[in-house]
Image (cartoon, rainbow, N blue to C red; front, side):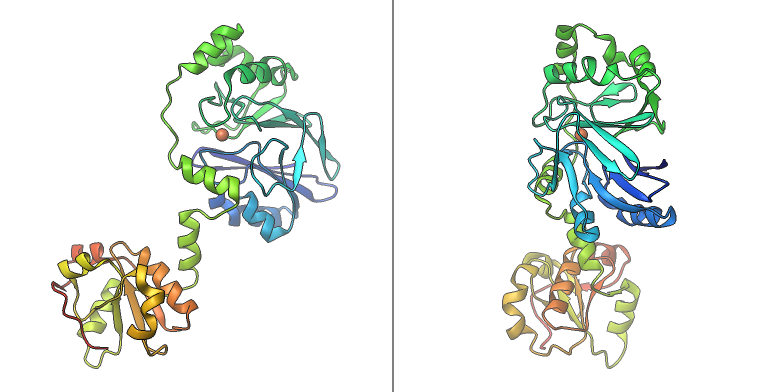
Length: 349
Ligand SMILES: [Fe+2]
């Protein structure tokens, strides 16, 4: 078996492949690692056939939908997954054939209703059902401590003690443990009595994960994250540095149209010398009037450099082939000590 373990800020994902057939499956891929997965699969001579999420993640951004579109392979999840983009609904006891490998599904609800663990050869991918020295939490949507008790003690922990445990989260850099090690040393698993276990899980008082609503929105809909929207826009526009813009404003015969896309009060408080004001929210509706020449060289800026990237991408899409975004924003411009002017007076077009 070919086995690759990738980590992104505590989120663990796994690429497993059959060395006979070069067929592979990717488990719990995370959105920031898409290029790494594809590069690793290519390096190892693997073709990914399945994209699997062990459950609906509330704390990280799943890459399954995006990879599925790119690779044209199915997303596999438990049949209770609320995500509408699941192509292959799995149930307890079923197997996925990954070349000669057999990935056996254990339905282990508790962390979420749709949680599964995947057994293959000498190891089990435990998702957030069982972590090294901990268990998944049960206080997020569809979590249930009673169900987690059953999933652990009556299902998962009955695997061979030597079976390796590969969780979906690990924050201390450990690669894996075993079922036997967890049974012996995992503090949460020492509550073998159902009531004591449920009581303990109900009183963990954990803080909510960051990006909870965004993760659930995107993982359940296949929609884009804010970071993806910005990355897509950034990939479609060139940028100009602060120093380059300053030099061009100072140069004689400058033909650059500087466009401030912030709100009016921000523009009036202080803008780049000579900048015209066209807020991002009105961009599409006002371009015909405000920017009649689509061949004009335009540099957009905002406060932090994100909205201006979206604005420049929109302008390019609308035919302004020379629109670029400032690399940085007014905040960085002011911090660099570059000049600004207050007021509402605009340079004529
Ligand atoms: Fe989770």
